Length: 460
Ligand code: DAH
Image 1 (tube, rainbow, N blue to C red):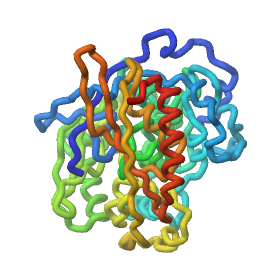
Image 2 (cartoon, rainbow, N blue to C red):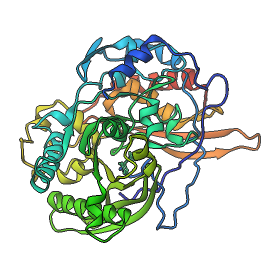
Image 3 (cartoon, protein in one colour):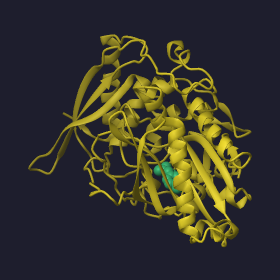
Image 4 (cartoon, rainbow, N blue to C red):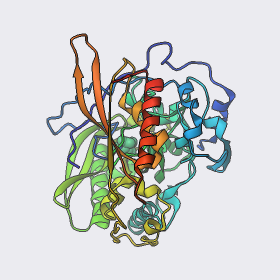
């Protein structure tokens, strides 16, 4: 969706305050025991992908340097947060809130994120995400009867090993930073992609599987980005017997099978559309591709995929095998398929939203019940060295919740003394009602106050 490609920064916390501490608490072990076992596919390139076929310059924008957001700062001003449940049932295990949201420098999970854990929108048959998940299941069930094992309630709290190491994400990769990922402690995260389950399921003997789940990423705010979204991962393993008969080498065989499978899936979801394959890079696959379809006058990135890195198979004792894998973002596809204009709507409990969808009905187009006017507020400040846009967005989201529609940098300059000023425009808009001036002003004052105290910037 034609926004400019966004910056990717390879950075890792490296000052003592920002770096992860080696000492972990018992919660870590507990949380890790719960794990059984883009991609930000939105307007920005996936966190994990680098496209190869287009002239693609990874720009480093000045405002998205990675840095920690010391979690103790989150625990002031709690009175503005919505109350959240204190115990969750996740993946069959009970998790107390204080295991996930803690006043600890290695923890950066705010209440607003904790309150999303366990909601599992993708498991609701009447919800657009559940309807889409089921439509994808139907495709696999029809074309590969009884082949693919399906997982949609694996615990989203995973080890850094599962989330990063097991899928070969390099030690200095941006996605590991505290600026991009929610850490429960230094060795436990809220999964930032469903690829986090690949290795464990392979080790458990699964050779054909689909994993659907909620994933978590610290990010900027606009109509297609939300810090919690949903992905589906697919993996298929082949044995030598599969490719030997074909005469093709293992990798070519897997890549061709992958493309055929996913082109069929795209046709199943979108009908007879034009498609193209883009070479790209993911740490976990080689070769790697993205599938795009031509839909409503634009090329739309549908998913990322590739032939699984041999090292991943080797580590699960499958040296003789070859496999393909893919990952797709459910919101991105559902927004297009159901005509849903804003990603916040997926979380709406307003009946005017929820009543429009029914089990098994993929074709339904959402009719906006009303378009309430946005209200814009600008805010300028001198940034500090540790300022990041993701931290700003978290502060704004923590105060305004789903009333914030967009946070956009509209001015950026550095003066002769080397001080950098940013001006952000915040768009407030409810999906469900008109907002009163007084309410917005109140929110904006709180935002200004917290931005100054938590982000150490100087308001202008
Ligand atoms: N994990 C990737 C992301 O979140 C998506 C992805 C790409 C998954 C390629 C895969 C894959 O399994 O092969 O950006």
